[in-house]
Every structure is written in C-alpha cells, then in structure tokens.
Amino acid sequence: MKNFLAIIVLFAFIDLNAQNNAWIEAYTSNWENYDGGTKLIANNDNWLPITFVLNYHPINLEANKPNGTYVVVPPRTKGYEVVRFDKINKSKGWKFKKGNTRTYLGDLTDTEFDENYIYHLPFETNKSFKIGQGYNGNISHQNKFALDFDMPVNTKILACRDGIVVRVVKKNSKRCDEPKCAEFNNLIKILHDDGTIMQYLHFRKNGVRVRVGQKVKKGEHIGFSGNVGWSTAPHLHIDLYLTDKDNKYRTLRTKFKINQNEIVDELNKGVIYLKGY
Ligand SMILES: [Zn+2]
Image (cartoon, rainbow, N blue to C red):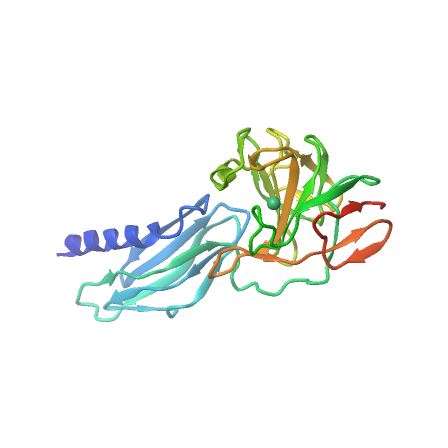
C-alpha cells in the first residue's frame, strides 16, 4: 500500500511542477519524503531569485506554510526547503490532490524600487541617437515602457546602471519582422540593487562582452548593437522591469540624463538624444 501511494504522489508532483515553469532555466525541485511527511526542496542555479506561490491540496498532511505564501529561493542556492508537510494521522497514508503552485523567476515580494534613479544613456559620450519607438509604441511596445534607439550595427552599448549580469544570449543571427523571431533575440539582463532588471536586446551575433554573474558598472561597455531577433532595423531595445505575479513582466518608467547634465522624466519617440557626459 505504501508503494502504491508513493506512485500516486509522484505523479501528482510531476503534474504540479510542470506548470508554468518551462521558461525558468536552471532550476529544479524535488520532494524528499521523511518519516513524518514530505518536503519540497529547490535548487536554484539562476543568478536571480525564484518565487514559489504555494497552492496545494494535501490529504492527511499539514503544511508549515499556508496556500498563497510567497516563498523566495535566493539565487545560486541548493537544497532550499520551500514547504514542509507533516502527517496528521501517522497511521494513515497521505497524498496530494491537484494544486496550482506557480513558480516565477524573480522575487515577487520585491515591489518597491527606486523610481527616481537617473539612468545613463546606453552609448558612448558625444554620440547621439534617435528614439525610433518609445513607450507604448505600436510596433512591439504595446503596454510596455520600452525604448528603441535607432543605431547602426556594431555601435558600442554601455550599461545604464551598475548591476550584476543575470542572463546572456549571444549565439543568434536570425532576424525577422514578426514576433515569432523574439526567440532569436540576443540579449543581456542586468539586475540592479533595488531588484529591477534592465533588459538590452538585439546584439549582433557574439556581440556580448559580459558573462552571467559578472558585476558591471554604469558606463561599462557590455556589447555591440545588432539587428537580430524580432527587429525591423538595426537598433537597441531596452526596458526596465520587475517580475509581477499576474503578467510576469511589469515594465517601469525610467528617468535619463541627457546632454551635459539635464534630467528628463522620459525619452520620446522621434527625438534625438545626445550623451554629452
Ligand atoms: Zn523595442
């Protein structure tokens, strides 16, 4: 009987863990049974935290955290106990009914950020480039606070803010005008100290100069622009975001320093911006 129950439980867990997790890389979790019950153990190889939003329907088990709890597994952590279930009636078996635990890349409890941070333009001093598509742009920025700088392929891209590189893709060369080509975007993601992430897109093939885990400084040369992925012309796309429970990806407005020492609340479509600093 014990083995039979164990098999049911195993299938239930496979089902639970298959949901919504496909886009999270370098993360595993497994259940470890012990005398008095079972516990969920996570291994997070990412340089970003992972958040579990708990939802289980256990039978003859009591959880040490209620459904709806956000459990944040720190980056680069092995053997992290997400939740533990203790048997209620020790002489009976236990199992799970289907639950809906969700897993997200990022810290969902982290909703505060520095709204007044002044970002630097992502290119070299004394250069100027036009915003080809701005916030809520109708090509690919619907409902996003994202910016496209029109610039020739091979323009040096500089970090807008200090941070740590949490994701890099550089192997792609394919390009097309349709959303399906987004999977070929070469990119860099940089995590800032307030939990926000800046995403830089469309680097040329092998045009990324940083590696995951590397600390970068504002103004540091991180790569060379390109025209790769979902891209209609050579440009750099950037957006700042936080992981959000409902849409995973909540983009944020960003203030920039332009000219010599001027601060603007937003960069606008069609305007050429000079980096004079
Ligand atoms: Zn864009």
